Image 1 (cartoon, rainbow, N blue to C red):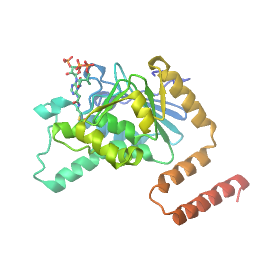
Image 2 (image 1 turned 120 degrees about the horizontal axis):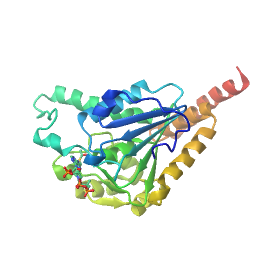
Image 3 (image 1 turned 180 degrees about the vertical axis):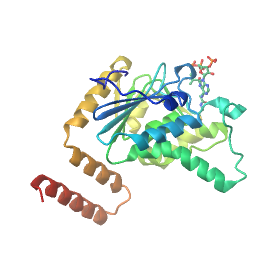
Length: 264
Ligand code: ACO
């Protein structure tokens, strides 16, 4: 997408993000995070996930929409397989359960901030979205897919479980039976099926991806900012709440909106 969401001069990405295989451009209310290791199909390292968490922590307060995209041929080939063979930092062997728990929790922070109600997050997916890449798309609020998109939850085939926050949204989106089928076969879901299953909200021809994301971002920004934050908060609560709790949440949020609108 590159300049798709940027009308002005983007802010410079920090050098640490470059090492993490990430690029960040902020232009007013829109931040674009690019997975930027195209020669490795945007494979992700521990630094990538820490870099994503750092972006979440340091996002300027006036950013309302965050777009995640991949440079080159695909969105992301998932975890950098080199890390299994000892490149980079290496894995914990799990023998210290508490330390490993903390370690994975730190990596998950790269994904959890994407649910924050003060921003709307959009994954622009083309080509492969595998493992941690698929989970990154699932962590976003809305997925726009090119017609060449290919989603695969590969972890079980490698002896692992998906642990980058993807199991909850996957089950919520496709249901437990389909989630089991997808994860335990590690099969690839093509764009058409992704649309049918609700994994992708929008599917467009590959050369229309940037334009579709640009249009979506413009529509998201056209909505009242306070109402957008309150509505996202409300919708995310809905799955966990009883009807009674959700009705109360609607009343609470509406009171906040009315007070703001009428200056009380
Ligand atoms: N980790 C490290 N390097 C990778 C990865 C990866 N996950 N994926 C691709 N690369 C590298 C390749 O080794 C290759 O390097 P080289 O040019 O030095 O040989 C380069 O990226 C290009 O890869 P190709 O396989 O040639 O690209 P192609 O477009 O034909 O295929 C595909 C892309 C399908 C993504 C393939 O590379 C692949 O299957 N990669 C592994 C995917 C995977 O198993 N990921 C782990 C998921 S589990 C998890 O994320 C926790």
